Image (cartoon, rainbow over the protein chains, first blue to last red):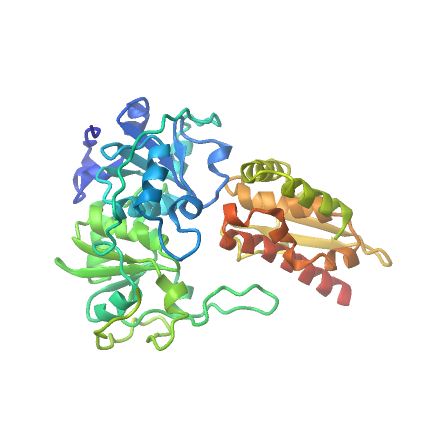
Length: 306
Length: 143
């Protein structure tokens, strides 16, 4: 049985208020049997240095990515990952993490690929919880594994492949990387390891909105009004738009995906997780350098990518 | 490979994967803080941009003929993996002659047996730390 949604003034302005919980709400609901808290961080050891009491660890790389092919785990593996953490299909899952919930949003997006219905973010994430002096523990939580059904992953509604992006031209694209990555300025220096991408720049017509702009100084999401200014007034998104967001490997753009989908209510938003590490290495895809978005090429119909 | 580093590598290799992470966490706690003359001077340190979390380092090379190298690393407490790697390099290499550090194999970071648990991207940060340490030693000893 899912936990009731939190009611507060800030959240009620968002398109889907139930997608967020505050630190107050979480502190009050920690003992609840219907809520499982997950910590998802960039740093794989951060959880071990201290976590919210009862929170379980999930790692984007070792738990959610396929170990061999560049893809996510399948339904069976997901059932094992969720079940081993005491998550059933109707459990309310609250995810929090470091860096303004960057990796928490990524985990939430993967949960959504499997259609897990009630998955929420802790507004402000790990940093806010700590800043408020709330309890942390290094105790390992006692978890009773439960059965999670094997659900086939459904990518199409929220995940874009490279071919989808080539077909998407003419519709809005949001590049959420830093301005230097967007312009293609960043180069590899001698004796420094390869960054892993052969070409610099951005996908033609993509508008630059670095992901962190959606977060306030304390790591919480900006208010609905502030977000509307950034994404509608500045980036030019309009009601009914079909939007694709991307970054380097799809983590930062999960954060933007969450904002567009659940806080601003755009129904058709996909995360292109191949992102720049795929696009910047792909053969014969168009690239624009510099700070201007550039014109959208003709969409390429046909079969591209997986 | 220098004996003090080889010993650390052996410790990692003799463990199960989950224990290796625990050991790396122990290392992250034992990274010594910067000495006062460096602590307030970020401009004296170089950032390892390949690390996912902010890591700064610098070196000091002693007199010839030994040219003993002192290593200094700085990373925030909220980046324990990065601190752990820096601490492994510190404990394994600090105080050794420049020549011995330059001879450390570049792939030593892969020998810790952490690649599967930590991800190649994260491991690259540690390789980059070693790469920059070596480059700085070369620059300092070329003069």
